[in-house]
Length: 504
Image (cartoon, rainbow, N blue to C red; front, side, top):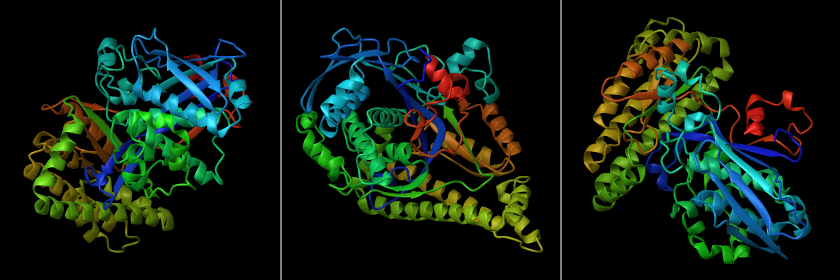
C-alpha cells in the first residue's frame, strides 16, 4: 500500500550521552545528550477492516523482525475505551501495548467520541521501523560476504531485516525503546488531530514529552533519568532530569483506571515538570562518530553496582561525582564557546580547524605557540576541550577502580587512546554508562574519520563495528508526512525514507 492518503509518519532520533553517565540520574547534575540522524519511524494509516460500531481493529507491524505483528481491539463507550490484545498473538510487546493503551485512553478524554470513531472506522495499520544503526548488522554483512566497515554498511538497504525476533536482536545502544515510544505516541496524537490541544506549540511538545516519559518509565518498571526520551523529543541538548516524584503516583498498571489523574500529571499547565533542557549543537566541522563493540555490557547491572558503591561510600563517591560533574560542565561550556567563535569568525575558524585536523590533539598546544597572529580563539579552545575531556576520562577510570565497575574498561582505554593518536581527533570516550558496549569520537575532517576507522578495523582485542549515524540536523520529533507535511506530493516526490516506509 503506497498511497499517502490519511497517512501520518512521525520520526524521533536515537541518542548518545557524551557526558553525564550515572550523574544524569541525579537532579543535581546535568548531561550532554546528542541526537543522532538514525531515527525511529511510526507510520499510521487506515486499516482494511471497516466497521460502524466497533470493536475497531489495530494492526501493528515491525517488519524488520520475525513474528512481529500484533493485533489489538478497541471499543469506545462515551469517554472511555476498552483496549485488548488479540489472544492469537504469539508474543506480546509491552512497549507498544502500553503506548497504544494509554494514548487511546487519553484520546477518549481529549477529543469527541465521534472524531475518535470516525478515524478508527476502517481500523488502523501501524508500521514501526528503525534505521539500521539501531541494530547490529554484523550477521547481515557476513551473509553478504562484506567486511565490517562503513562502505559495506552503506550497501545494506534501509530498514533491513534483522533475521531474528525482537527479544533476540543485538541492539547498538542508541535508545531504540525511547525513540520507538516517542515516535509512536506522537504519531497517534498527531494522526487524531489531538497534538495541539495545549495553549501553545511548546506546551504541545511538552505534553507529548510527558506522555512518552510516563509510558517509557512504566514499560521499564522504574522512573529512569529520561534523557533518552528527552532527546527523542527535543534533539541535542544539555539535560537535567525531572524529579522522580512527578510520576511516582502513577507508576502502576492501575493508572489506566484513573485517566483524569494521569492527564493532570502529563498536562503542562496542570503539573510543572522540573526537567531542564538547553539546546546544543556541535560546532561546524566537528563530526560525531559512533561504534558498536561486540562485547556488550548489561547497562542496568553497571548502573545498580555504581549506585550501590555511592550508597555504601557516599563521601568517596560524592567527591568524585562533584569533580566529574564540574569537568562535564566545563566540556559543554567550551564546546558552546567554540560554536560561538565559528559564528563570529567563520573564515578564521575554518582555517584553524584545518590546521588542527592535520596533527594529533596532543600536538595542538605547539600549534598555538607557532601561530604568530592569533586570529581567533579556535586553537586554544580545541586544546582546552581536548585536555578537559581527558580529565573526564580520568575521573571515569577512577570511578571504575573505586566502584569495581568497568565504566572505562582497560580494553576500551587502549582503544580510545589509539583513536586519540589519529590527527584531528578532538575527543574519544565511552558514552552513557560506559562498559564494553560502544565508543564515540569527535573528529575534525574526513581524513580524521578514515584514520579512526583504520584504528577500529585493525584493533585486535575487541571487534569494533562502525555505525553510519552522525549528529541529527533535524533535531527531535519530526512530522515526515501528514497534516500539512508532504500530503499533496505524489509518491515519486516524497523522500526516499518516506517512499520506503510506504512500501513496507
